[in-house]
Image (tube, rainbow, N blue to C red):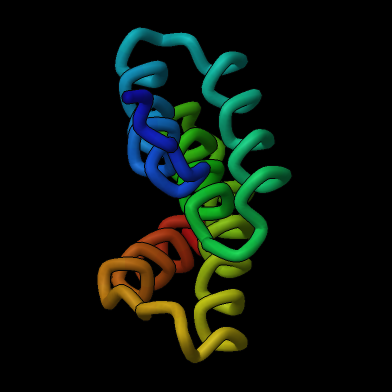
Length: 100
């Protein structure tokens, strides 16, 4: 009997693949996966968070900050989504880094 796979069963694997791609230096592929996350999973913040992570790994702190702010706004506007304290810390860190 074939098991039904819900699209959310794959979310963690897809989201975590962005980290693997960046560790391999495949930033363009990581960008493409982030776009898939934003297109196919608009009800979660993973695409925004991961895109911020990609830009941060590329050394573009300003663009990373943009996406982390969008992710935080998304979580604030969607009370059913968990708000992760790490993102507030990351935003403060990048805001300080972009001021200098």
